[in-house]
Amino acid sequence: MSVPKILFSEGRAGRDLIDFGAMPSKKDKAAEQDYAIGDRVRVNLHTGRIVDATVKALTERTDGKGLQVDFGKDESALIHLWQVDR
Image (cartoon, rainbow, N blue to C red; front, top):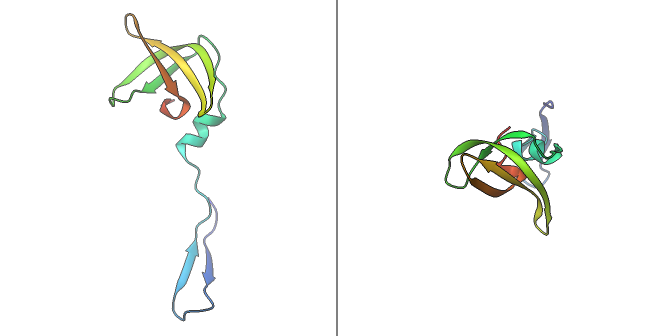
């Protein structure tokens, strides 16, 4: 974490802005990781259900990278990287 910096606005007296710097998000961690076929991942499905899944394919789409995963018995899903829990 960065040390807070206090920035004073010049136009209005008494209006201080505190800048805590950029905070890392969980989405950035998932986007940085590389996945391979056969990796075991934990996935948050759109219904809110979290399942353990196996990566079957890596996809590249216009809205970013995705994973084709299998879970349960005869169930599969095409997910975005931000849906990977760990």
